[in-house]
Amino acid sequence: MIIDVKNVSWQRDETTILDQINWQVSEGEHWCLVGLNGSGKTSLLKIISGYTWPTKGEVSVLDNLYGTVDLREVRKSIGWVSTSLMSQLHEHETAFRVILSGREATIGLYTAPTVEDKQQAQELLEMFRCVHLKNRPYGALSQGERQKVLIARALMAKPRLLILDEPCTGLDLLSREQLLAMIEQIAKQPGGPALVYVTHHIEEILPCFTHTLLLKDGKVYQAGENDQVLTTDELSRFFGVSVNIHRSQGRSWISLGEEAIVR
Image (cartoon, rainbow, N blue to C red):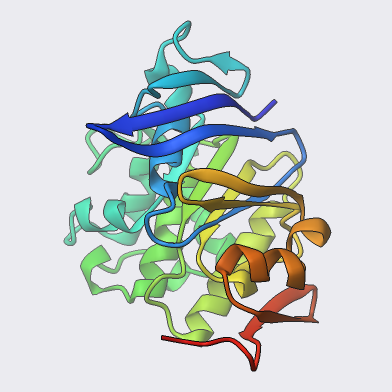
C-alpha cells in the first residue's frame, strides 16, 4: 500500500482543519487531489509526509506505520515538489547542481557528487529536454523551467511516492502543457513512483491519473476512479454550481453552466 490514511483528523487551536479522512492509494495507482483554497490539501500532504502529526487517526505510507518508524528515513522515499521549495533554493546555483542536490534532499550541494550521480542528473536533463539549462543559474530560469528542474531534483533520490503540489501555478498555457507532458512521461516509466498531483483545475488531470480525491471543508467529498468522480453531477455538487464537462484527448474540461450564478 502506498498511502493508507484511516480516520485522520487534525485540529489547530479550536479549528478542525481535517475531519475523519480515509484515503487509500494502492500500487499502480496515480491520484489527483482536488480542492478549493482552505479545503485542507496542504495539511493532508504534511501529514502524509510526516511533517505534521494528526490529532486523531492512523497513517501508513509505503507500508510504514507512522509512530513505529523513523520518519526521516520514510521521507527519503517521498519526493515533494511545491512552490515553497522553489523560493528556498539558492538562485546562483546552476540547474545541474540543483538537480544533484536532490540526492540528499538538501538546499545546496554539500557533498561531492559521484560519477553515477552526475550521470543520473544528466539523464534526467535529457529525459525532460533540459540539457540546454544545465549550466544556467537557477535564478535565471523561467517559472516553467524551474518546475522542470525541481521535478528532476525530486527524482534524483528515486522516490517511491512523488507529490506534485500545484506545479502548474503561474505557468502560461504552453509552459503548462509542456510540464504536463513531462509528468505523463514520469507516470509511464516502468518502476516509476506513484504520483499524487494536487490542483484546482480539472483540465490538468491527465489520462495517466487513475483516481481523484475531492477534498472539501476538510472532509473527503468523493474518492474513486476518474470516470466515477469526474462527472457533471458530482462536480456540480462539489463546486456548488452547475458545471458542464467536455472530454477531449483523454482529459475533462470544465465550464460553468448557463444557469450558474457567479458572484
